[in-house]
Length: 66
Image (cartoon, rainbow, N blue to C red; front, side, top):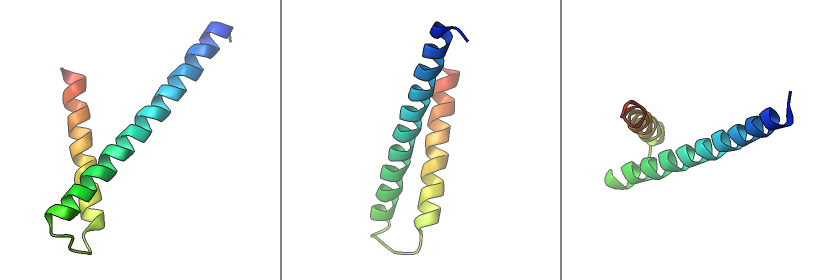
């Protein structure tokens, strides 16, 4: 592999890592908002997380198709 290709691969991997971290933080933040909207009722953490993931994926799909 050429040095340029290797550098591009490293940069792409870093970008994916940063993007994944940003997505996780977005999901975490949204799941917490859902928890608060429910009046901080316990027992819905998985439901909140999955809803937040679905919303993030939908947002990402819309951005990719635009």
